[in-house]
Length: 414
Image 1 (tube, helix red, strand yellow):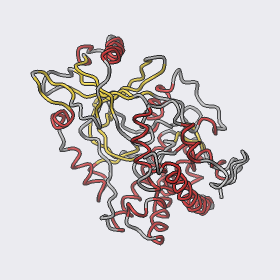
Image 2 (cartoon, one colour):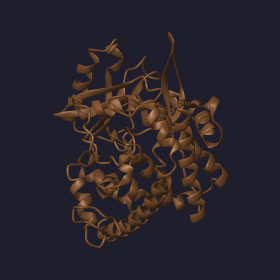
Image 3 (cartoon, helix red, strand yellow):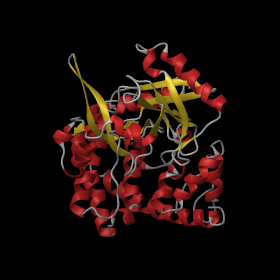
Image 4 (tube, one colour):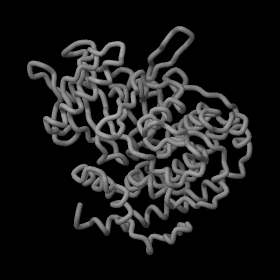
């Protein structure tokens, strides 16, 4: 059972539903309903939606808490990797191409590298149904991930995963993503009714009040005045955006802007409220004093990714902070449907290990993170790997118990 010093030692003495409700108390109740329905689907979905429980349960006195401190994703699991178009500087040249990497930094903080690693390995053990794997296969995949992670650390080499330097499922995903055009994304999320406007489908894009729409427009317009091309960000339409899992219920908007010209060169933006990291209560290392939470998330992404999106901005709005970014047609993630062979999964997990290690290496020496040599030394010491496997296996079983408790508590609600 989970062993912490706060009086909550197992699923039979703690109220999981109460803990979840307390964490989500400030979120939109209507959208939270959708989150909880998704979490009821399986234990992996429950795990995705309860990052805060993972860190609440992580032992305070744990040898792996002494691992090198790096900039971590914080919510690393199998489905928080994907494709995106990043901007890479080569001398005076700027290249934009599609990369594969970590795609969620809402919880990003300075913490032991083992926290990312252990959460990812736990997600492997919980994804048996989605992966179509037995217990032996899962153990093999977990070891492949750890071996790839350590081998990448030992080399001390960082590379962005792109179509020309990878293979298998990831290469196919990048290739398919690269072929998608902005007009396709526009046609999917918007419609032409004289002018282009958002497609309010009642599921992914919801209507908002006129007052709130005007407030969002003013915030974007005020920020745009400081940009090189303010006309690019002229707002044409705004809706409430429903997306993701762990962040469902936070304030989030999809914004249609003029871009490079209507109707086919418009752009779509994501404008998302950023709250304190779920890891914050459990951090032992002093963090940088960011001005607001959106700046924390933006900097975590810029620190970790070797090629970052061209548009990433922190904006203060409605008494808090929001992150503004471009919605790209090239964004996609791996779909786990049980039809991927074990050899393909092993290659994929090998890539995830490299991506994780590269992210940790890329953030080395920045804002208090460990230096590269410390990470190389950590990679050479294999004694910590069995500890990760043991705890991840144990905690996956705990998640299964928590999931059952959650389903029982919500069976008459959702």
